Length: 124
Image (cartoon, rainbow, N blue to C red):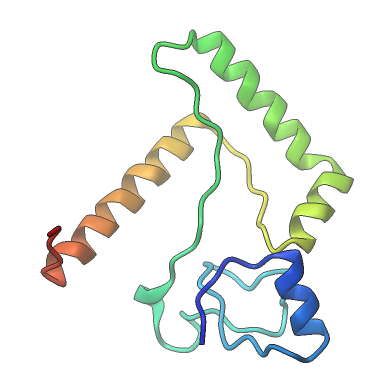
């Protein structure tokens, strides 16, 4: 068993019948693996963990620059060819606002901290 991000190489192995995915840790089934249930569907909702990719700008980047970058990235993610390629690689292109991204990172950090505390994980 392995827990890994979906990649083109991984999908090739799945399609060739060499690997059998049991579940995905995303909030919804992946378009690249539509017959593979989510962990939540299997009764493990708290185990759902997915990778988040984003673009960060240096601190104090002017708001108009950040807004323009965000708008251009959202346009790019909406391009059919780009979207198709990302989906085929097992990614879920979502785009959105900078505020939603910041909020999502904060929520993920808080959840990771909760998991670490509840498991009594300590840095040695």
